[in-house]
Length: 219
Ligand code: ADP
Ligand code: MG
Image 1 (cartoon, helix red, strand yellow):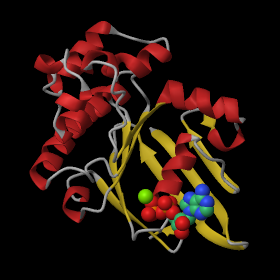
Image 2 (cartoon, helix red, strand yellow; image 1 turned 90 degrees about the horizontal axis):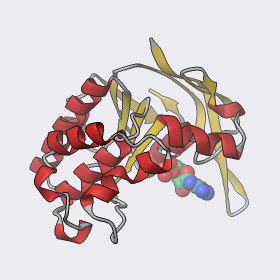
Image 3 (cartoon, helix red, strand yellow; image 1 turned 60 degrees about the vertical axis):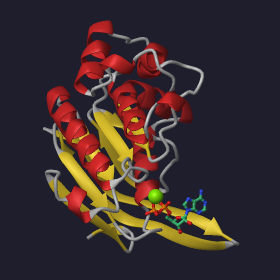
Image 4 (spheres, protein in one colour; image 1 turned 30 degrees about the vertical axis):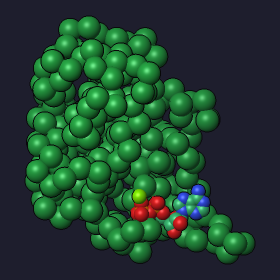
């Protein structure tokens, strides 16, 4: 089953009055349960593509379809709803809430979405090796532990699609491998799709498929 289908997607920014054509006709299909890596030079538009899929920004042309939703036809409010209900987001900066415990950070997004499931949160915490850390605060965690919380938080809502923008960029090589291995397993467990931007060709090679963005298209 095709989960995400992108056709002829374009996005242009203007920089000092000059148009910068970042995406020039991106085509991409991702199946449910599929785990795909996206690489490309710095500035090639990887983050822009993820932002458009997540509805954080609007495309100029083309279409993005996630399950039965035409993301490119949604209003700003519709895109926010889509993000809340169907998409999990993980960034290089872990973006945890410093004043909340690990347990509350894990549950934060799911509570906002009105779909907190205590049993699932508990399972996520166990699978991510966070069971003994639930009462701690983000500043008391290592980088790898913080990113595991961020991944758990994103998956706690049971999203259809997990999007990660260089999620291991702030981690050392061994920690990056561990975090990604846990993420791969969890994605398989939930059956959601996974699209990860990474600089690491090695990590990209551990997913089901590896795509490269070049000159505004998937090469
Ligand atoms: P990557 O993630 O592959 O490094 P980005 O998607 O962040 O690349 O950026 C692609 C290009 O688009 C860059 O030239 C960047 O400067 C430009 N860009 C990204 N976001 C904006 C924006 N909001 N306004 C203007 N230019 C932008
Ligand atoms: Mg980027």
